[in-house]
Length: 322
Length: 294
Image (cartoon, rainbow over the protein chains, first blue to last red):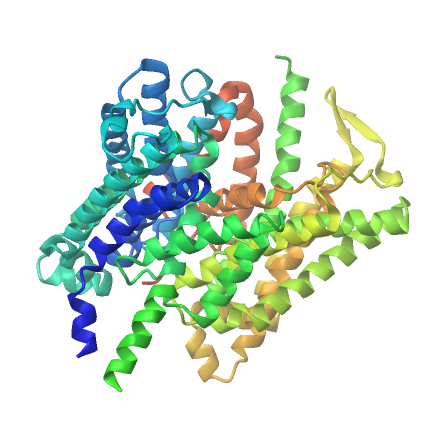
């Protein structure tokens, strides 16, 4: 009875409405934290399309994040392109790069796939790091401008807010739309085929599925959304740096997905939230955040391999079955 | 460019290659036997370097104490590796590869911060042992005696590992474990013990490389993640799990790096990753490896 009630509640919509209220009730600091979480959640969810849905372990997802961040940042800062165009361009460029890299990656399996994604990501990083004329090299691209959001002041209730809060709303709406699209993709026949491939690639091949082509499609979609997340992040961060594409960034986003639960659509969101909020809390006490992260990861791998959301869902289901 | 300069560049590449071989051979050994890509291998190298610095600091700069420090550090790292494998990693066998990979990454994070807590973030350096402080001039290129020793040590170690794997009873067991873990277990081999020893041996090599590199490179935080990617490149070139492949891979990589800087100074790192990607695309099992059984 209660279960049915719980399931009837439009949780996603409620969460969205709750998120809309954040700048109204919370301080500027928490609004900025929420922006950070939203963007990283999109990044992690894009990876989960590969990891959780298709069963492909990419160790170089940061490449597409960095590509998107640089594309949008360079266009907006050096060429005065409006945000909407820069944002779209970030998705296109990341998608094209993912198509080029993915074409080779999906031909390999398991560990070799992971290694090749890593190699490609390091190539992107090396280019960002050394191509001074375009990417700013080691120094990165500082002072990426905020988009022109003056028009938002005309919306009732938002008039007295600053650009940071306006940017939160832009991020919230864009990320929510991306989530909707990703959710539709995951639940579409296309997404079901990806799951079939994860469960058993040989059998998928037997029933006439062109496994590589589907994997490549998933790789490109994941790349596009990682690029969009990167574009949002570059502006939020007020700068784009080569580190965005370094392999440890790819590892970080993998941890977010695993922490939240890669079997769940909203798992990466939970992971991004937990990790970012925890980071914020812990770094105010100690500089040794990586140590804490490592220990969390170890506990997770041994005690809760299904991740936070996966474990919770398991608990609820277990209770229902009992 | 005169020939002595080129020769010096060649020797520089050779020295770098020998260090890379030491590290990558341990990584390759562990991958070949346990089928785990150990991200923490670079951290073992870093810990070896820090320990060597610490021991030299305590024991003093004499030649004898330098070597003592080097071997003690390598042994300590081997012990650390054995403990990690026995009590943590072994519980993850049979789980998805991703979990093992992430576990080794967790070790990277923990060890990196542990080193920062103990030794801080400043650059530490160790001077060459006095008996090897001199240098030799060959074809106009100056080679420090220490580097010369490293160049000889690399092949010697490669040969020793080969002997240990191919000419001893234990080596046969190790190779059997690499080929078919279940079969060896069914025949009464102690697979767990072999895994622990192999992991410890791999860690020993990483620790040894880290300790030996201290007179040439400064010891700094971040040396772990930098070297691990290089070691990955080397074993990808040579072939995952292949000893001689790793040796050749290290030689190729060393020369690629030292001449790459001359030919395309700004894009040498790029070229190295491109090389790795190209090899993975055309021969994923590397130049000397064999395709993995599915």
